[in-house]
Amino acid sequence: MAYMTRTIRNLLLLVCCLLPLGAQAALEIRITQGVEGALPIAVVPFGWEGPGQGAPEEVGAIMQANLHRSGQFSPMEVARMPQRPVRGPDVDFRVWREAGMDYVVIGRVQPTGTDRFNVQFQLFDTVRGRQVTGYSIPASRAQLRRAAHMASDIIYEQILGVRGAFSTRVAYVSVTREGGEQRFALQVADADGHNPRAIFRSRQPILSPTWSPDGRRLAYVSFENRTSQIFIQDVDGGGRERVASNPGINSAPAWSPDGRQMAMTLSRDGQPDIYVMDLGDRTVRRVTNSRSIDTEPEWSADGRTLLFTSDRSGAPQIYEQSLSGGQARRISFEGRYNGNATLSPDGRLVAMVNGEGGRFRIAVLDRQNRQFRLLTDGRLDEAPSFAPNGGMIIYATAGRGGQGELAAVSVDGRVRQSLVLQEGEVREPAWSPFLD
Amino acid sequence: MMSMLRLVMILILALVLGACARATKPGDEDPSAGPGATDPSMRPVPDSGIETMPLDRDGRLGMDPLSDPDSPLANRIIYFEFDRSDIKAEYEEVIIAHGRYLADNPNARLRAEGHTDERGTREYNLGLGERRAQSVQRMLMLQGARAEQIQVVSYGEEMPVAYGRDEESWAQNRRVELVYDREGM
Image (cartoon, rainbow over all chains, first blue to last red; front, side, top):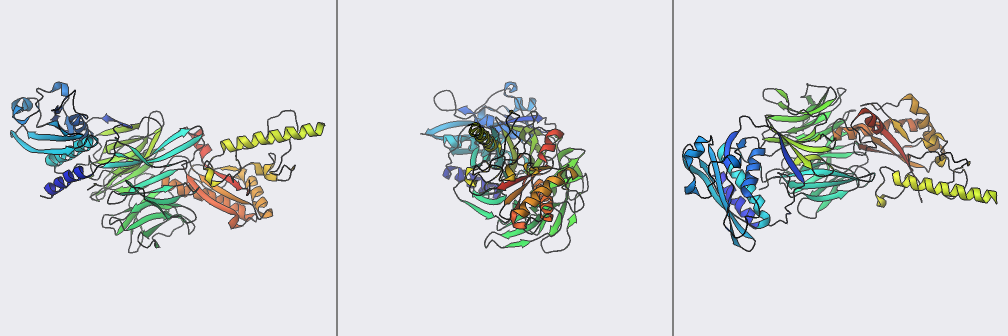
């Protein structure tokens, strides 16, 4: 039932919300590691019921790419499909079963007016021989990709019982070099890399973007005043304010789960320690006090404890600190270097940057069974960020040419993909929360 | 006549040097921030067969030791080992010279800008860069520099001077740069 209301809200949102979105992709996504054990599904190319060549967007192809990227599905190649039905009665369940497909998605795009379309899709279970779900989503031309992402979310949740994260966004920092100068931009793109938009540009470094829990604002560190300071900016509006500009370091912002407080690293009292700011009255409370570097705070879902990085033992490791006081407790023990802890949405997994033997890779610690697993095999992997449904981790890595790229890996390590910017570097990815 | 020509040559050289300095100065691309700093990459003029003498900003000869390429003060970069912030013995003389200069010139101000290589997390490296700059700050203060003369800033790994992904580049990036503010320039 909650699912239904959310779906209806999604559809309303799509109708109400008009964003100027370009169609150009700046991030190219390549699936670099296969998908054994993923669910077979066929997404038949959508029909176009208007004049001319076809729909302005290949809705079916977008959905197929989404499902493939999630790592949970293994979509059938279009060329191998036994039939290409556009309407429900034309689906021959037997031929799809024989082709090994448990699920078939069909659909069509209808023009309904000037710049207005209906995207209709249906999901069929070929084993039971029935329709699982089907919707009609109204959209403008600019919203067709979003309609495809919503349809992907519905299919993902219907089959797996877990909410899809295709309608979410990713923030990251892009860096280009012009002459000897670096140019930095804070970008926000759809979760599939399309529709990137720079919301802030600077000739000085930008780092550590992090989403507010409602997905409307980003906090980040900017050096625009020749020292690190923390800013909060509306993602879709003009609002921007500086929230921390103490002497020394102001960095590593992290919103509390209720969005009312922000944990951060300040060195105003001599060395980097963790502080919590009340975003209402801007008062600041010190949480750690050690001679070490304490940084990279991360909130637990209940808002009562923080994970953070500290080199109090001689090298960086992850610690946990209750906000009601007491001693910090070390939780990472594998490898010489562990930093940048980030919690999965269900709080069970801690992703971190693990350094050992001169390599930095993304690792995951399961807090229930204490199992520690390396997920990636780069040399300079960093900045892990969970998708809001916990299924994937996006992170920064050094590409073959040495430049920074983004990559994503499923939390079971099965699927890996790289997101390559056409020019320059990309780094510091942050996956948004669910946006409704 | 000769000395006139010589003065002109010196002025031209000084201007060329100044222009180079502006073009390559790291960490100061923002024009609104003001061209306060001195170029750490300043080098002696290549041997042109002409004896050169430093000019200060008012065009007076030899008044400002900061502009003297032969002074230890011309060295403005201190390098560090991986994940370390202790000062290597070879850089002590340079830091002592800057500390004495600050002590002798109470109006002088500088930024100690700490940097790291790209290994490790960006936020941790901000802390490490600050630790390096603080090591330099402490040694400057031992020579009589006062705390308010030195602004410690950490850029972490964000402003590399070398972009290779190897030890040669990393070694150049693990550094503290001393950047003087020269008011009115």
